[in-house]
Length: 64
Image (cartoon, rainbow, N blue to C red; front, side):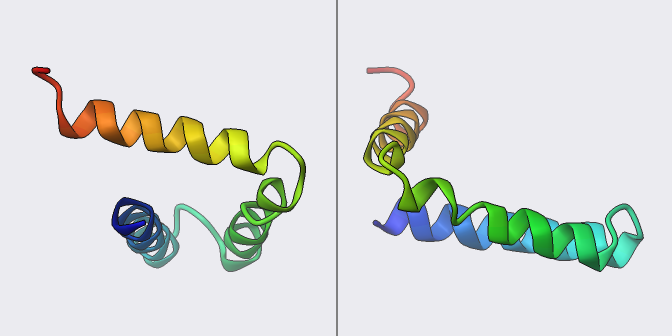
């Protein structure tokens, strides 16, 4: 859970930086953020969460 929250926070910070630099306008940024909620409400939501958890575990323990 803590990893998921930190990933969401990091992606939010990156999105804010991109908006402020003019790389991404506000409309597409809002669309991207809202579209991130759609897979979570589908049947593939648990599989996506499992995949993200496994990726986080492999990144946090690269030598094991």
